[in-house]
Image (cartoon, rainbow, N blue to C red; front, side):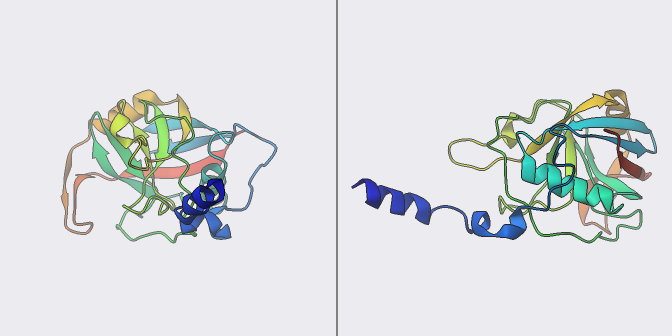
Length: 197
């Protein structure tokens, strides 16, 4: 009976878990809490990443930091009291290249609380690649529950919450290029991201 239960259980394990591509190469493996500085057109944001709770996600994020492909991207989605999202597009709305999707680690105990950073994704729970967002409020609707995967939180803002609040106040509108609402009228640029510790 127990063996039958285990076979049924493992038959529901997402196929992404068996795909090595979901586990990016380690970056700074000896640092459990690396920090990064995001220089933006409105000021700097310093974020502490949590490798203990989200190792695959942190390695994925740091991979994009090290290859410089976050530099010169935009924050393309801004909803006051909800999120500031970016990392995926250049100022002309051209898409940046992506690596393999990363394993969803939303069940790691970290919540989508104000001042945290998390990975954006599509409906597929294991579809996060390079886009991330900052929570501008306590967004419990983005956390996992007994029926649904959540969105993986992988760090906390140490400095620059005022910068995020300034971003939340910019004028947004519909963008034909993206086919999306809540796009800043004047681009919010992520000038450079660097590992500081």
